[in-house]
Image 1 (cartoon, helix red, strand yellow):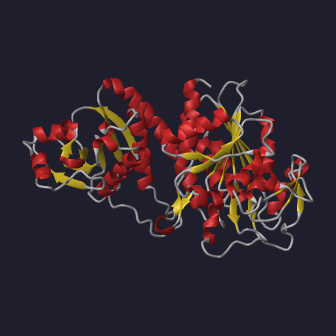
Image 2 (spheres, one colour; image 1 turned 30 degrees about the vertical axis):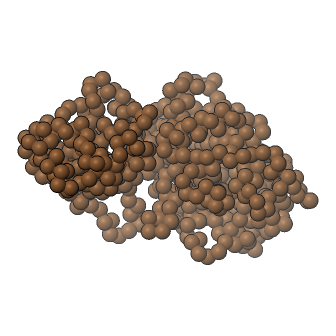
Image 3 (cartoon, one colour; image 1 turned 60 degrees about the vertical axis):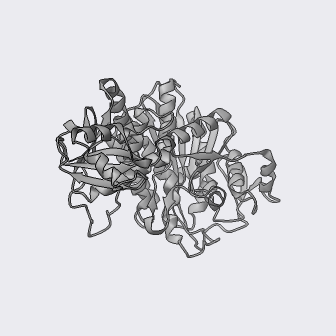
Length: 499
């Protein structure tokens, strides 16, 4: 999709379609009023007759409106003007796209950027519009013989800005948003691939492709022998039951000052999680291909940073394994030694994500990081606690937590902080090792983060549990690309603040 910005009146747009807003109670937006006046009251007459009330979800497509240069005018219901939120703004854009896809229009001038959203500027509105449009038009059909492509796909969106003074802001928003959308698409594509294709070796190959695409990216892949020399006994234990060898993938994007400590992103890369000997129930086990969404989001975020050529230092670390049952697979009661030297009693082989992350988090210290953020589809308990709306957030550094919460609110890719109190740590006590890998029935999301916190004491760290937000089930099954938007907003905020 091509995105541009432009200032100008809606009636002067020589284009396939112009989209304008209608608010609840039949109130016309500024651009709708302009078109109404130029056409002799066509829009107000239709509204007065009740053809469109202005509620969210309503649309009305008009053809050949008098005294305009466009072929069509799309009226889009937006609800109450004072009540428009991030979610409703995205929904309004998606409603527009769905109607346009059926209309035959391929080029659109959107005046929905004039919709008021509290404390949000034109850059925010363009970024949210592009992400919403790309989400709506995304298809994963690489493995289908019938690609089911639209007969006349949408190919160009022009976003209206109020004057030439907003053009630079709008162009910056388009550039940032297209880079973020590139990262989101990569994340979705990787996550939607089946486990027989997207293996640890495949993830490593995709990381090497990033190195080929972007001059500032350097990829390194450690194999089993190299990880054994580093003492990564916890990570390697998880991979023992699989014929797919483990990989530790590092992706360095070093475009900032050499003295600048990097932001390190650590993504859980379990390309298929059967649960191991602690076998998962069969229902919906196919969705366990999504247990590498954390890893996919790290690749997507670094791709977006490289697209923008941000002058920053970002490192991605992806521990990648397949968790399978086998005669030599780890068993409940086994004890392994992590890279840190801590011994771990494995009480449940389905709590494997923390076993690979703890070695990756120890490895992260070699970069002397400014902050470390790990991203993982870690616990079903997070879905019980928070549902499918925010990611769970915990960590050991309040400013980092606050920055991520703020980035989540701004991007619409929200997270919610859970407590990481010392009270929970004793649930991980083991009679036989330094630490157990599960903490019992209560507070499973928190005790998982408590486990990780034992390996992050040398730096500022935050943990994002994305189990509830990384993919959707049901008829709309598929990866969401989260939390690339959140991570990129955090990184862009850091860049713009000069940190």
